[in-house]
Image (cartoon, rainbow over all chains, first blue to last red; front, side, top):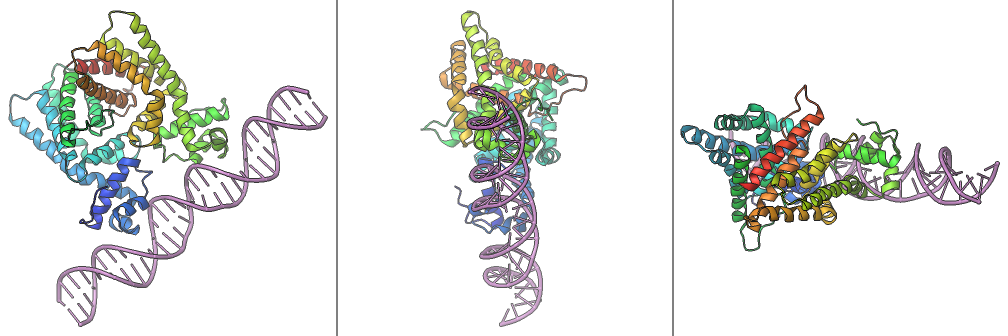
Length: 206
Length: 206
DNA sequence: CTAGACTTCAAACGTTTGTTTGAATCGTGG
DNA sequence: CCACGATTCAAACAAACGTTTGAAGTCTAG
């Protein structure tokens, strides 16, 4: 359990909600569990966020605003160069997520929350994420298209879809590979990102 | 909504539960919603299954017993041949899932339920699935190891982990690619499987 | 120091949850 | 045709849910 006692009520709620959403899902994590973990009053959620749904969206906003910016920054940097590889492009997408997941304050937990959102097939959440952060994926898709001109559009979309799946699943640590005993969390995640780029680049080029 | 009126109470509950678990998740789908959709009495769940948790496990058992058998059958067939490719092996794993998802009675829905299970990180569900069906993955992993002898064990496990992620995500139809208007569900899913095998084989070989 | 806004708090609201109960109904073998 | 086990049913249980309330407490600008 993270110790957020030095933070404001708002931040403590967001941190506790993030952890419980990752562990139990959005529906199963109750506001009573969240406020107990954050050591704040139950009514604080509705005071600071209005509703549970708004709290969920705020959990995403807090991380995704920065993550999206960093990804687009890296993409913009690559646009200056004229010898961009597939690996560079994947790196621009993955490294910001890796850095977030290495953040001292529960970034890795958030990647699990993000993966949960993909499982919520018809919910408002998908709409919220697509409306607010869909442009990032669109920009990257365009960059991939320029880098893989031999692929038909439809063919490219299939492969990108599969790639996003692999990325989502892996960054959420849903897999069976456990961190080895002597290995730091950081080293484990960096290896994961390295394998992810290697694997996905090959799949896209195939 | 499927019409299961010709089936027994038990089967109707399993069908309705499968659909609602896929759509809303295990916690958010209530027994009242399930029994209403199945048009049976609320108490029928506890009469036939004992508890909600047992119902959840039974939803998996109903599909996974057969799916696991089919996968291992295909794997056994490949063992007879002496010119097995990576694509053959992936096909042995993917095609049974594809056939299940093309089943008349909601097989495609089940793949979404299965993907939900991966998001349940610490729950009993992961243990239940690993204890009862983990041997399938183990057998396939051994076959992949024989086919990719140049890869170190650890390296292979990384790639298989990523491949399982791509498979899970894609077969659950979590991605953004929608079925084209003129295209049948069957054709869409067959294309998906084809791309999946192609992409994953390249990633494993890379 | 006080007025006024901001924040926290315990308590309660009406719903909904999974589960249990005992009676009613069904279906079949003797 | 009756009896008995299997199934279905409406009703109720305590517990947990998200949300609202109004008072108590905290903090800061004037």
